[in-house]
Length: 197
Image 1 (tube, helix red, strand yellow):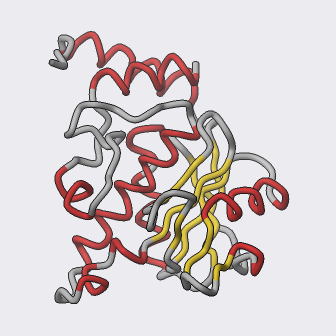
Image 2: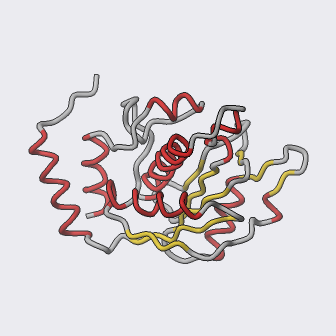
């Protein structure tokens, strides 16, 4: 059972992140194809909270044709990561409206290389309309933010967390995404401070 530490202990680590990192942690937010500007801005803004991260939204990048699987009508997320590593320097979070998958899985909400530089988030299945539900912009944005924070957490070195409320818990279904919060648990918060200090 996960036991949380006293709040004052972790407030020390939060303070440490603010002082030692400041604006040093930077990341490019790359729209792969057309992505709503409000989604990009929301992600940029919310990355400031857990990681004190400065996001720079870039110009639209075309999805690599080599990553497209015509039989599945999906893009291979690992090939997208390879493309980003080849064409961009520094940390990169890419966001696409296209459906993505990786070997052994029917789909992925996102993928990143742990302690690497690049990540991708697919908003396709995060949109309530994908499941024939009414449009819900607030819910849509909340889901995208969770998965964006999750993948950036991997870039910074965090692995999957067993705390079901932590944003770093693995999401196998859209229900899993909705159940977790967009916050790091105390343990993951402490790990971030150690990994990035």
